[in-house]
Image (cartoon, rainbow, N blue to C red; front, side):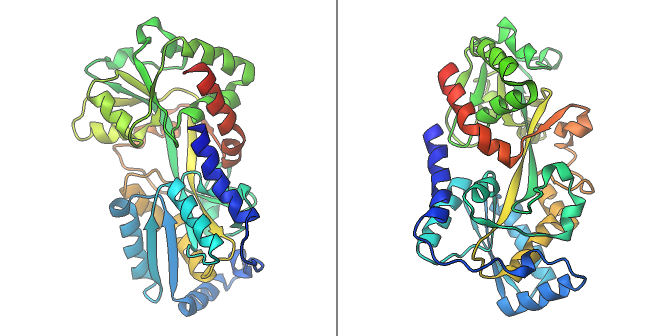
Length: 358
């Protein structure tokens, strides 16, 4: 897992350090704040005629509705998208850069923004829609912008674990009755390292390491199959009574369809944001900014909310089914893990898992 994470990041580094084409200065329109900004974007985008979006969002749920709504608003601009996991996007961008043929005008996904920034691949960009997003989840440099939130928690099988007995804190996970009964996802892009990073940042190294040693004695099951939802499906099937370090809204979506599962939040709840970035050398800067504006607008965020994503804007409601896992709504402490902290801590947190939980 750690080797995969390092390999993915190395792809982005190759964009900055490898044999790349000459990059012109970032177009002024990316950070332009004049009163005529919108008209300049419309005029420029009409001449460009197209915009290309690389994203890790689900096609039928999000990418297709976003594209259709964007076309309705800007019929003169052809929007196309390419969908892949964050690792796939990294591979594609690397290949395009080496071929001196950058196709993407805007990239989005879990981990994309922060990796692009660290590799020097992102250009700063500003949108007035950023003012409607909480400051704590924005980048002061403008090198990435949040698109959708993720809150991480616990899933438990309600036939095996009565709600009254479900863990309510990290210390509750140490109860001897949970030994050999807890699983967490251990795949290339899993949230298990984020679970560790969250505690290190919230509690400090000494307290976090002491807790992790005790948690390791519980013989956590390292689950390494499938995608982000697969472990929740195994909890539903009764293979594991409990899973931690999962996307907290996934159990609620399944519960809404009648599955015997529920979600739990352990404070402080780790949260992270999917991010977007505009790559250096963007071919259609005006259209890229219009698309960025649209995704972060109230209309764009409502489309994502309807697709079972968690919006970054406070004036957009998440779906009622998954709203209970938003920490601010649940009255539970949240710890936002910034992209910079993800970069700084993920490798060492992954190494701690390898050393303590294998």
